[in-house]
Amino acid sequence: MLPLHHECSGLVPSPLDQVFAHVDDHRRLSSHMSEPSWRTGWGRMETEVDEGRGQAVGSRIRLSGRVLGVELSVEEVVVERNPPHRKVWETTGTPKLLVIGHYRMGFELSPQGSRSMLRVFIDYAVPEEGVSRWLGRVFGRAYARWCTQQMVDDAVRHFETLPATHLSI
Image (tube, rainbow, N blue to C red; front, side, top):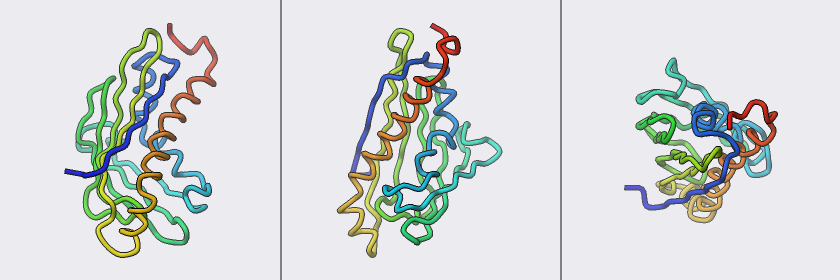
């Protein structure tokens, strides 16, 4: 059981099936990690997916890169996928991350008329040893909040910028 939890929600201006198709693409969902910013220590993480593209139970996803000059990597496996409502993935092996350790993460969608409520959640532990354990205790909660909020905000922004003719109401 992972001891820490955070979640964020937002109303996405598009129907369930379209939102699920968008956030089911792990490269889109983790795009906030691929662009350097002060929150990522001016580093970036690349996302690699297997032949299942992270869109089937058992599919594997790998994120790797450098943050603050430190090489990081994590491997994930999709453990639940119920289109267009829910998807969950979790770490495998030993994550090499700075402020969180093992985690189980996912999203849920529920219809809200012609829109969709997107909830992104993470259950996580701080890293088990070294400086990362201390960093996790100090910054883990803020990172979990930022990461889940970015996923929600990115989806909302994506559908807000589409022409109205794209949305089926």
